[in-house]
Image 1 (cartoon, rainbow, N blue to C red):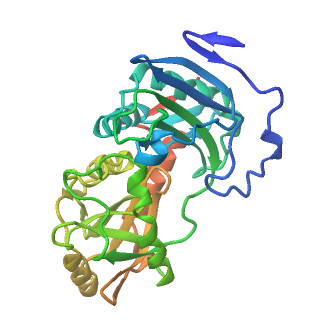
Image 2 (tube, rainbow, N blue to C red):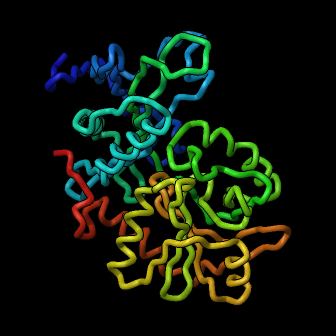
Length: 354
């Protein structure tokens, strides 16, 4: 056992690395050797440690299971061309998980501890990072309530955990989206801007129903008028009209995606006009029909860039010509290039784990 400041590190006796087929990585099903854990009790975070990956023993009355105090982040570590592990905008992930914690009345996790935890676990698991550009070590920080009590109240104890998974691309093919005017994801004033576990639980049935109709994901509409596009089940969404790229404005019901933020900067760097504004499903369907809408794509840490080939709404289908896509491939290449060191990172978004 070694100790880094207050972080205690206990390593496995034998790594499972040699059992992994890096040419056939199913997303989120392969886990690395170690995990980070910290406990919140007596009003402070303590017992910071990295230890062998294992199950937890949890009380049946765990308050998170019953009342949903659970939040998470999704990050990636990639391999620079020189072999050094790279993180992408880790400080923003720290800030966002604390925003989520605030919304769910959970304690902030110190940024210094967050950065140390992510850096050290990536350093320890660096051989698990796939070598192929576009693949990555997916990093899942999350926080859950740990009180053992049945009652709707704030927990007084929590766990903060980070585990990692080597992954390939999240989506292997272009997507067909269903604009759903029956179910909603979030309303202004709710928890839509937080990465709260319950947001995703509520999306499962509508997504399941959409898949039975031949779609891949839901494209959520606003809670009031059921007209204005919010986001897709696992990512933010962008629409290209000539030299103008439109993405829904974050109004409190839409996740403030870190990849979304990065793409807005890249697009402006490249000379595109970027509009963050309300955009209706009627505008999208009409502009697709007229040919004015040339590209639709999603963005997120897991997906990076996901091409959309069709959008269904009230029985109509708007089809996109993937052969003419230029903006989405450029953005995907730029993000992946920065993460591998193939392209210059002019914004200093990448952080080397040396």
